[in-house]
Image (cartoon, rainbow, N blue to C red; front, side, top):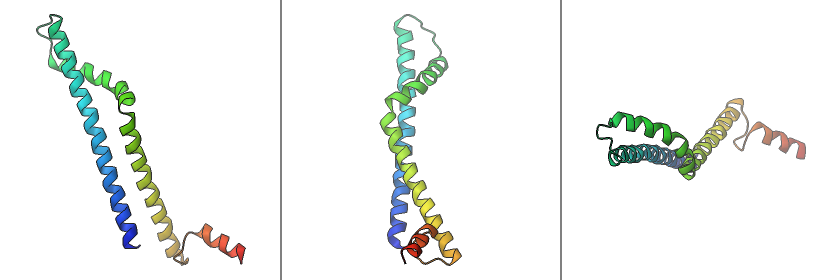
Length: 119
């Protein structure tokens, strides 16, 4: 593998990690915000002994579908990063398998077959 390919893979992996961490923290922040809203809303309507754990559980249940809608751009970006890293790994694996079979460095077996047909 060339250094350029290694840099692209590590860059993609770094982007993947960043996107997944941002998405995870956004989901957690959504739950925390909903917990605070539910807890203080209960205080405002006169429920003085509203358990925080109950507010947290309600927030988790509400945040599951709400997060799908509200955090869609972050989720799509994380999914694209995962797909990019997965594609690079698949391509690297194909190149490794081709080299192990003794194929030329230029590409996969399908590429070799198309070159043979042209000749």
